[in-house]
Length: 255
Image 1 (spheres, rainbow, N blue to C red):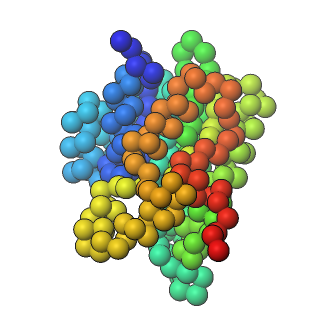
Image 2: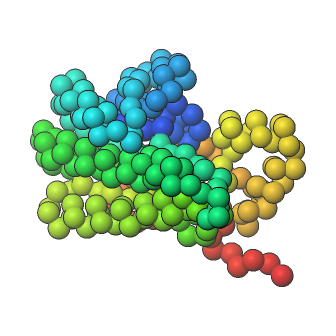
């Protein structure tokens, strides 16, 4: 039986680990031709080989790297149906500690990288054979709504919301049928977090308490939202913020 993304061509940035890895695996299982784009070649190539994706080296902060990816997609696949702008980093620096260098590096990846990805996706999706159209999915965070002291990270993820909305309304006003939405994970049990919990077991309880559901999300739950937004089932969804955080941003702090 055909999958929900059968015959679609998709790019997932930051696909060599964590939520991005989960998206790559799920997209492949749904029938998409997936390009796993990352700077981590060893892990990225291994994951791509395991699930039938293609690994592509990509530094999201470098315009030339995006240009090379655009050429590869155009020459080899002839279309792009979905881009997931998932690559991102944290700084763990508050407003008193952040440096200009740390701020600029994080913004170049978390925000400018998303902007460059949107530009590439629109350029390719305009030329899709058959009909113009596609889906751009930007990974933001629950910190887009509720701040943490990491000032550059919080600011970048709030910026992803504005960028997503701007891209969505531009594409709609141009009649392009290119949708753009953001996903907002909360505490998610990635392999990195599993390692942290092994080293410091109390981290697990603290992360569980973040959600009214009293547990962390799974990589697979976030990937499921990405599949929906990439699929034709989400044809009337654009400019939206899709939270996958177990109600974290909905509940008032308890007394």
